[in-house]
Structures are given as C-alpha cells and as structure tokens.
Length: 499
Image 1 (tube, rainbow, N blue to C red):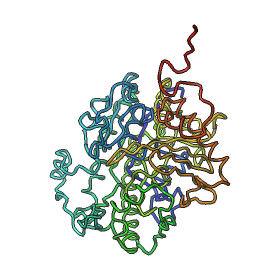
Image 2: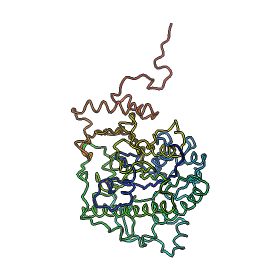
Image 3: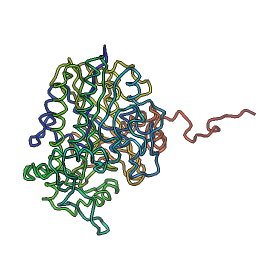
Image 4: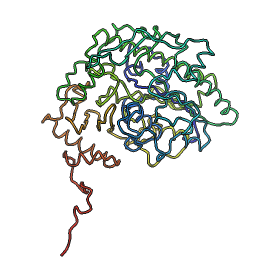
C-alpha cells in the first residue's frame, strides 16, 4: 500500500460460515455483514490454522502457525502446553505502534492466561476467558450507569452426560434487554475508542487499528428471548452430516459426541438450538451495523479498511457434535472472511485458499509495513483488488494439538480432497466433490490409492518445509518419498569409517 490505512477489524468466535446471507443462508438476517461483503471481497475458502480459540488467536497476533508460537490449547482446558505466548515473534500490534498507529481492541482476548492486550501494545481492557465475562468490573459499571439489570438466565437447555449427570449448558434465556448484552457493551466501548482515534486522525493524520472481538455466537447461546426465539425451528434444515455413523472414523469422534450429549437430545431440540445460533448471529450483525455507522458518522468510511472473520467454526449438530474438537471437518475449519479496502471494487468473491494468518500479513500491508519474513501468511490486498497472484497457494494445511486431552492431527485440503493424519487412529480421506459433508472415509479405498499417496507426500513436504516436526512421524509410517536426512537424529547414521 502507498500510505497507511485506518483499519477496523471485526472478529466473532466459533462462527459457522453458513449462517450469513452473503454465504447463501436464505433465513438468517445479516444485512450489515452482507453489505460489507457487497462493498468488498468475500473469501469463499477461508480457513483457520487450528479450530481452537487460543491457538487461532495467537496465530492472528503473530502471523505464524500454532506449532511455531506454541500456544496450543485454551488454558481452561490445559493439557500440558504453554499458557502464555512467548516473545519470540513480534505481534503485529507492536509493529503498528512503531510506525505511529493508535492500536486498540475491545472484546475477547484469550491469548494466554495472564498477559492481556496491554502487554502487546493494545489500548483496551483485558476481558479474559472463553465466554462473556459478565462479572468484569467494566461491564458491571456500564450496566449501573445505564440503569440495566445484571444478567440472569432461565430455561436452560442441557443434555445428559455418559455418567448420567446433567450435560454442558447449551442455551438459555438472558433476562436483559438487547441493549444490556455484553455484545452491545463491547460495541459501545469500541465506538468510544473510534471517536478518540477519529480526533487524532483528523487533527494529526494519525492512523488507527481498532479491533472488536465478539464472544459470540459461541455456545452456550445465552440471549434475550427475542433473539433466542427470533427464528422458527421449522425453517431449520438439519445438516446432512446428521447421518454420521462414525464408521471407519477415529473413535474419539464418537466419544466427543457423547461428551456433548448429542444423542440425549431430540430432533426438535437440535432444530431449536440451530435457530438460537442464528439469533445470536443476528444480534452480532446488528452491532456490526452500529460500528459501520460510526465510521460514516466520524468521516472515516472512505479512509478505513474493514475486515471480518472468526477464529474458527462450530458444529451446531453437524456430525452429531457440538462445539469443536478433534475432528477436522469444514464445519469448524472453514471460517467467514470479508475484506473491504478503500478504493477497491466491491462485490468481489474468490475461491483462493485463505488462512487466518493471511489477515496478519494484510494488516501490515495496509499499514505500509514490510512483511515479516518469518511469517506464514500473505497479504490479501491483491485478492481484494482482483489481482490474484499466479503463485497463490493451491492447497492449505491446518493443525490440532488437543482440547481436554492431547490429540495431535494435521490436515491437508485441496479443492477436491481432504487428508487428515491421526497418529493414534485411522487416517481420513474425503472426496469433497462426491461427499461434501465428509461422511465416507475413503483412506483405504483402492480407487483413491494414487490420490492418498500424493496427498501424504504433499502434506509431508509442507510440514517438513515449515519445520513442523509432525513430519518425522510421517517419514517412517507412510509413502512420502525418499529419505534424505537422519530419521533417528543420531550422529552415527550414515557415517562410514575407514580402516
């Protein structure tokens, strides 16, 4: 970019792509995000590097894949991994500060346990945890100033755990007006920050980066009744992957289905929960509309790039699962991705493979900062201006390290196929053209033998080139090509002694 650009970065948590009108949902009312898509570029093949909040968010901050920054799990479900991000990689926020940007964030942080946004160069409070921190003193003080009641819930929706106890909370009614929700609070705080940054921008030309990270539509869906019941369950078409049998799949998927109590809920509840998730999406879209209106009111619209994405998706019943976990389906690895760059044509969409770490490179590009040579992403600005580079990636990888317990996985996805390597279990191979809902594992299908070998080799080469030591397991287990290095890591291997 020729000169620094203001930026508004919007992120949701655990958000399915198919809940947005701009991605084809005919029922959910998302006019503001749809308008953002119409004014910019929609990425139809946008993926998270890991479908867990903390690894994904740390990758956005640093621009590198999780195995490199090593913040591999949410601290609430720590499985022995690091709980704080190291200083090995410079976060984009500090680089923006170095060139004179105002840098702010309001909303979910979840990058480590104790170090908050201020430790990484952001203006903004530290809202810890994985779900709306309704006990945070800033929120409580805001409620008191506005004369709103503290949130209470009723009508809880739960299944039954395998041990017979009540399952995780999935949804419930929040007894507050919509104007008192945490989402509305975060939007108010963001607008206050934008007003401050607008004064600096118009007076001194100082650019800004402002992020709003909503906690929704992550479950449990705790909403005012008007949003919880906004959409009729009769309009919900249950996902075809509800036919999941887990045949020839890793056993852990069946166990996660049991943990999320899916089979203890009836079809009416399944539909109702999806409809509630849609209501949560609309609540957030309305807050997005308030933020975009603030840009116009503050005379910032023409000078501000706007991005929207999510840390990862959510199952909402697909594959008889809720939440996320050790299953690398598109339901949780594909994420929404929108980008509006001032002066670029709108209404554009692309099927190019895009990663969350590409947004990191994009932020630096929009600020006129040279890309980090150690980063794993590439700027999306060329795609947003309709000038897709000839050497853009033709496949994408993702990784998983565990949630509740260690469980390493690696994925390679092409246009048609997806390979998932599960060291302790069966591997997975899906033909996404014939089986878009990923129901039939064809890893051992003789008809796909050449495809399997090719994908294993490609994944191996991707991981090896990037330094991901997962490739070492693949060296001995699969047909991945000739060995040209010491797999035992012994100094003696290959040494020839002369008499």
